[in-house]
Length: 154
Image 1: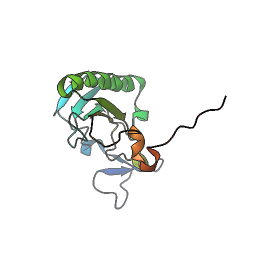
Image 2 (image 1 turned 60 degrees about the vertical axis):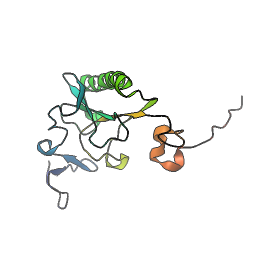
Image 3 (image 1 turned 180 degrees about the vertical axis):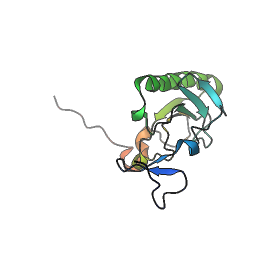
Image 4 (image 1 turned 45 degrees about the horizontal axis):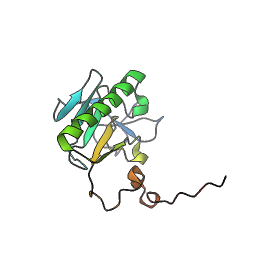
């Protein structure tokens, strides 16, 4: 049963069986994209430039069907999304010439997801964009980013 949770805000639906909230599809910004900033698409997903990019060329791969996280996608949708991650990478290499990439997915409020429609970030990285890129996506929890590997004893 879905019901509006008091104080949740317009368009947010409460799911008693889940932690957090799911955006109603009629209010979902990703359900209502019209191919703006389109990079590449297929029957089940589209890749678009992020409106608030982390770096030049930052792309979001978004399934066409409303699903809260990538874990809610069926196998074909999941595969279609990651197919577009690869195709977008090729396009970005030609257009932006990045030195590397981060691929990331936030699944759930406590993982930092703010738009409750599944999406995959493809973020081009450039030499010198941060002083020390070691740790990559581990930097979402700053004190976990830099670590020393311990040698394994035989």
